[in-house]
View 1 (cartoon, one colour):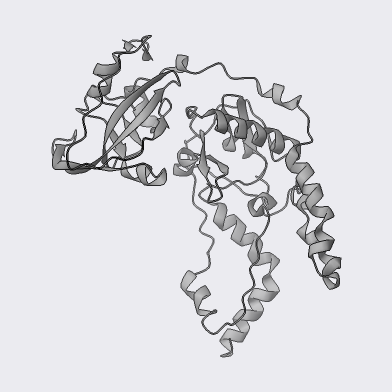
View 2 (cartoon, rainbow, N blue to C red):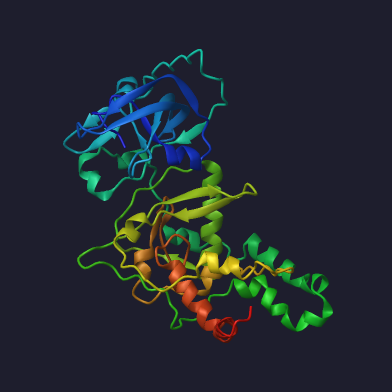
Length: 369
């Protein structure tokens, strides 16, 4: 978000932790007064980043670390004075000058340690819908999106499908012969099949009078764009997603996994805020741990694409739409990030393993573990 009333640039502490950004200790703590004129916050850390505005204008920007609301980054007067963009207040557009005026980086204090530089794209920051009327944004800073139909003309045989076939071919070599009757349980090809609609389809009931927001397009690196294209092609081929042209869409971003690969995440916060909660009971963690207190052998079961076992209910798929620079798409299966997803999945698991769960409860009631 760009805020001409902010005397400095801010970054949310949770955003810093999530992206492992390098922190620098300030020589002296500062006390800032928020816009309400009453709340005071203490600033003791800062982050210096090489930021790309609209992927065209790099500049070193120093951010003060604090807790923000829905905006992970606020660009204040220091950035506005340095970049000196053209602002059309009537149209609500901001256009960068070429070449931009880059502010001089702040000299590190003697008590600050030298840390590695970091890079961050900030041209598409998520912010609450209620703030949009007071914030300056610019759709002209993004390239025109490619029509989603163009992706449908690409080959439907992805490298991931080839890998799945190769994996299934080798199952008989890694699974003991006495369990070969269950080979299909471990099949990646079977896991990639779109299941039919069932009574467990995930529903998304909305609060009365509310509708899902249409979010911005977040900036992505070239590596992330390549991963996005592969994700779209693969899941279009599976039928897990389909093109959308309806007036709702949530933004996407990528999160790095432990193995270094990228995981696509849809920012469904706007949808979750207006979704009526499903209060289906979830297991109590302390009770689950109690069952293991005398155990000597443990079995680890991981469901491949577990949430994809659930369809999105008919009539609710349009609410799942997400926006990319390649077009709008909607999920046909349940993704991560939905407020009621754990409840829907637990309902399926409880019914699937009802005889086992009820048997355990009966033994517990009889005083046995």
